[in-house]
Length: 157
Image (cartoon, rainbow, N blue to C red):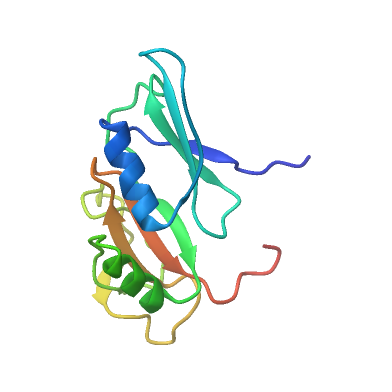
């Protein structure tokens, strides 16, 4: 069976504000369509991605800001962070996980399920291993994103 994640719906409180934010990130606007006053869909795609985001009016009953742990893979996290800062996006400092485990959770996310020895350490992963260096940011509603550096993918990807 062939399956591919195509789009994820984000809960936002202000569609135009969210649209401006994601366009400032460099996401490509694919669709902005309304049907009356009660429904509007905005569809954007991150540069280089085959998966997109969608938000709007009448799209989801989820609370604005409740989407967390949305990962954006980047080849060079220092370059990506610098570019986002240059676009006016507030991004955390780069960090890695002390236990070498793939980071989970976001700035305000649930940290009760951490493994022993897991925790943020400042800076790039000492060996600059793929999947091991991170930075985080949030959209205006608090939906949480994680930049993850991947220079070489695991086999089968």
